[in-house]
Length: 219
Image (cartoon, rainbow, N blue to C red):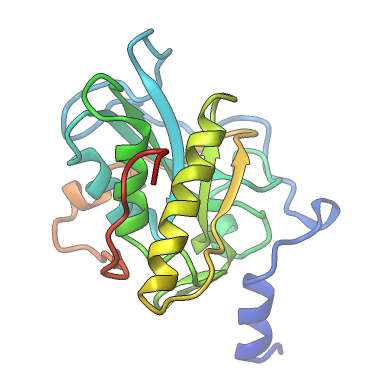
């Protein structure tokens, strides 16, 4: 029987693609309608909408923070960054899919810029913790940013550099956030969507470093 340390190490290591769970060809069945504002989150984006995929640890509290951000049109939670197609929550929690728990954020850039969304991201978790977020340990809790178009990557990198400077000035370590173009985003099960709206007393592990993130490329 594996020890607790062996289990933690396994869950905190991203598996090789050949070793990842096989998953399934069919997506999980969901309504696709946001439980708070009734907006469809399974949608084709309109010309005035932008999208970013963010992982800040457990996705329940992260989604609530983001759906309450002015300028955000709709959110959903799901899995990204790994290998297993259409994974289940239990599979992701095993650490054998390579996926992280993420929030899909669709926002109106005329109300909130990508830099503004990223400010919420940086300030509401600790991006220096590697394969964990607080007491939540495992590769699925790692800090991630997945972009959905090429023009967003320089903005993300500039934001990361600006926040790194602030973190170092406050005595924190190096950012471990994974920054990549999005491969595939898989919607999580229906009961995870807007979880803390459905379960107001549910678990929320969201916590920042107390460091403020400047906005803008000129920082």
